[in-house]
Length: 135
Length: 250
Image 1 (cartoon, rainbow over the protein chains, first blue to last red):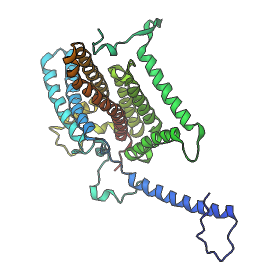
Image 2 (image 1 turned 60 degrees about the horizontal axis):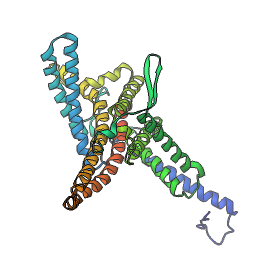
Image 3 (image 1 turned 180 degrees about the vertical axis):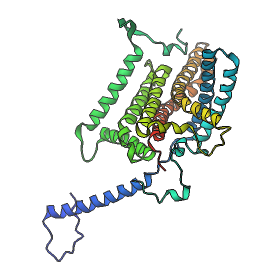
Image 4 (image 1 turned 90 degrees about the vertical axis):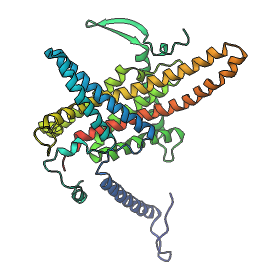
C-alpha cells in the first residue's frame, strides 16, 4: 500500500483510503490504455516463428517438405488403389506432393502469403491495411 | 539385451487385455505415463494456484510464467479472437511438455515417442481447424484452396497442390514431435551403450569411454532443450493453423 503523495502538500490531504483509491484508479486507467494499444498492435497477427531458434526453424522446414511429398505419394497410391491405374496416379501425385512440399517450406519461411489471405473477395493492398478498423 | 536402443519404446500391458465391445483394450505403460503426465500438470498448476499470493512464491511464479507464456503466444498469433482457444493450446502444450520431460527420467516411458499419440493430437488439431473454418465461414471456407488471380489452365494443379499442402499439416505436425523424441532417445541410448561396452574392455577401454560419456552428457542437455522446443513448436503451429480458420476478412 504505497500512498502516492503527488498532490500539493499545502492542502489537506484526502482520507488515506480515498487517496489510495484514486492512485489505483489512475494506475488502472493507465493499464487499460496500455492493454488497448497492445491489442491494437497485436490485432494483425504475425504467423512467423520468430521466437523459435534456428534449430527449430531448420527442422521445421525439413519436416514440412518431407510431409508434403509423403502425403502426395500417399494420395497418389490411394488414388491408384481405388481406380487400378497403378503407376500413373502415384507419379502425378508424387510430383504434386513435391510442389506442395516446396509450397509448405516457402510458407514456413514467410516467402509466400498464407492461404487465408485469399479468402477475402478483394484483398486490399498492403499499404491500405493498417488504417482499416480492426477491433 | 541391455544395450538394445529400441527396448525402451516397447509397449507393455500392465493390466491384461479387457474385451470391450469386440475390441481388445489393455492398460499399458503408455497409458500409465499419459495418466502420470496429466496428473503432474494438474498437480503442479493446482499447487501453484493454491495460495494466490500477491507476491508470488517460487511455485506460483512457475505457474504464472507457464500461463503467460502461452497466453502471449495465443494473443500474438491469433489476436483477440483467439481467446476461446487458449485453454486448448495451453492443454496441448502442457501435456506435450510434461510428457517429453517425464521421458527424460531414466526407466520412464516417453509417451510422445509413439507416432500414434502425436498423430492423434495432430489430426485432432487439423480437424478442429476444418470444423472452426466451416463454422465461421460456411462452405466459402473451401475457397482457401482456390487462389484467385491464377490463370484457369493451371488452377486445378494449384488447387491440388494447396489441398495436398493442407493435408500434409497433420503429418508434419505429428511426425516432427514423434521423430524428435524417438531419434533423441535412441541416440542417447546408443552413446550410453558405447560407454558400457568400451568400459568392459579394460583400462584402455575406460580411457576411450570418456569421449562417448562426454557426448552422452551433452546430448542429455540437448534433449532437454528439444523436449521444450518441440512442445513449443507444437503449440505455436496449432495457433498458426487455427489462424487460418479464424482470420479471413481483409
